[in-house]
Length: 264
Image 1 (cartoon, rainbow, N blue to C red):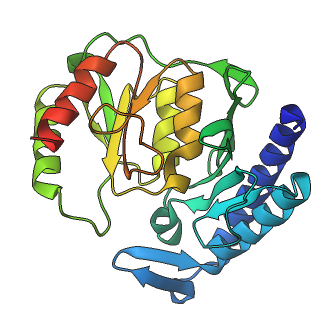
Image 2: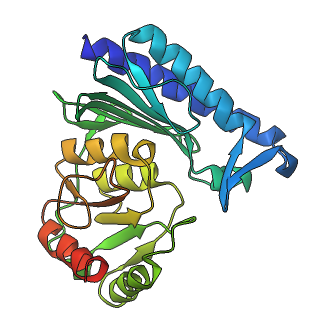
Image 3: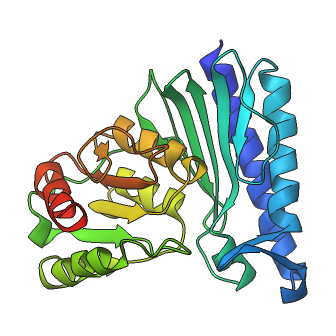
């Protein structure tokens, strides 16, 4: 595989889909929304963006399969798969809010080797490959050097339908409200992750997530010098539904706090 060529194709596809979605928002009305489940929405924009991505990426790497939010395609027996979210932050989008992002990861067997996140409203393209650093609009980025949770700005996300851990989750929020610079909830996990990668946040955690929400962003965090794990400190954060991402310096402290609250 020519990773540089695939990266360029993925960046082009993400930007094209994101720009189209941004242009469509001016025409968008509430009656265009479909309900997939409680608090789980989809629109023709999500579906069209996914079709655009699958077409472009499928042409770029025909042997690859797809793990996609709106269900296009299937996994490839070759072990090479694109993991795509055509519009991460759909609820934001349908209410005229930002951020919302296109997320693309390329996975070979069990390892991500390429990640692109395009946050459309600010026209910011984050990317990395297994052989590169992490970049924002062509400029290198890195995580913060903040040394303690007490001095950190933390991002999180609220569950949409899985409330089985909500009491423990509320306890984490209470702790961080009292023992950090504050909590933020943007409504797009892909954006939260790349904001950790570029130093806007020091840490991010959330549960109830899907692979397409986190695969690209988590990889970019790692290539920017950060660390990523699940709530037990393990490595099952892409398919396990829960994620902790931090700069390098506070990882042990932050992930330990999450583990203590979420795995009592």
